[in-house]
Length: 121
Image (cartoon, rainbow, N blue to C red; front, side, top):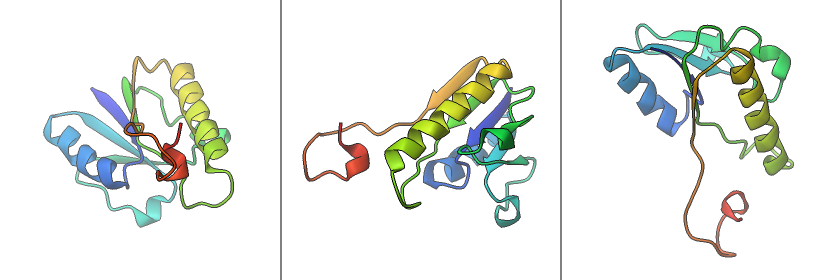
């Protein structure tokens, strides 16, 4: 199965990509800067920014399943708005390409004021 991983350079993605390769999948890693990513053998790299929908043209072509492992923390400003925009751009590009499966990694857990703002309801 051809699988796209958005967030391949993050903690979860850096473990998921090699596991998918080991399981026999054809993996494409979506990264913002291809020159700073050293993919495992056999992984195709696509450069794009989920905040810029025009950069996603062709990225989802021939993909059957796509993982969304992205967050916008640490990039300044309104991370909640950036997260929404990135997720919407991901969904629109995947839908336009006919991707049949999407996996979205979100944060679930306890609620309360002591949580980081990105985890608060």
